[in-house]
Image 1 (spheres, rainbow, N blue to C red):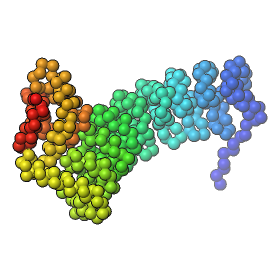
Image 2 (image 1 turned 30 degrees about the vertical axis):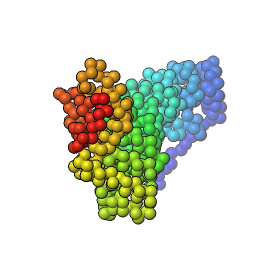
Image 3 (image 1 turned 180 degrees about the vertical axis):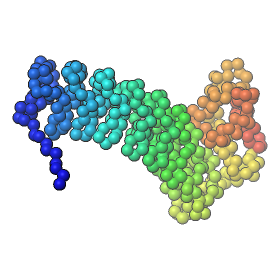
Length: 417
């Protein structure tokens, strides 16, 4: 028979002194705390509360008493003691967003890679949208915390901040070297996650940092597919397109974003995609084209839009401006250029101080990206190659004329008038 370990209950004296110590700590009564610690029962300063399992140091930390924390550390408080949830005073300091107390505890030997009772890294306790908590995260990272540590679901801190839409913390983590190519437990990229949760402010930050923009997530869907399925995400769709996300990638069911937009009856998205030359003849895995879906849904408005688009494409081919329907994106670019001609001329001329007709490639791209040029990354490359001058210059006057990418006289004289 295995004998059970006998647990000795505390004496009334021990309980009374611990309660008195806790009360004195929370009231910032240094005189009484000093008296209890020096004259009371041995190691009272590290005795655990019977219910919360907190020490006096936990109480001082949770109440934000910086001077009391310093005093208790001087009196021999053990910074490794854990409360009922397995949290050390350091973890509680991060919970409360108290940078100064956190620094005191680290100086006293606290572990910047500490974990709680559930093995959750202390960094995740700083996930709150306040400057206080951000400061704590920065302290931990400066002291050696692992920026790419993962939670119980295998997600990094950056994945969590993007999901929650915390702009400041996301920027800080990226600046300090967090992996922008990481994915969440569902296989979603950071850009995908930001788009899914409508965090528009994060998209430019992630794109600038080099986060993959065209990687697919569950079901082979890209962020563009997600936006096309929801009419409330139109502004997100525009933003993603301006950042170079592909507009006609097929998911695992063979559906392009245009398929998804038609299936959802998302008229704004349909018009947007058609204006960027997305192909109409692509069939999904069930053999259905865009028109098939519109007919099956008895969607008269979409059928009208498609018929009009087909007529435009047919005319562009018959007029000899493009060779085949797959080049209709060139007509979309030409139409966009005409619509923005005044702005483009002003922008280009302002940058071309010596009026050479040439611009640095970077300057040229910054200008057309600012006005959401309707091109994919691959299409941009085609146009830039056609208008290349030397290793880094672009012939912007020829671009405005459109004669280098359209096959017949599309030029209407606006560029050089």
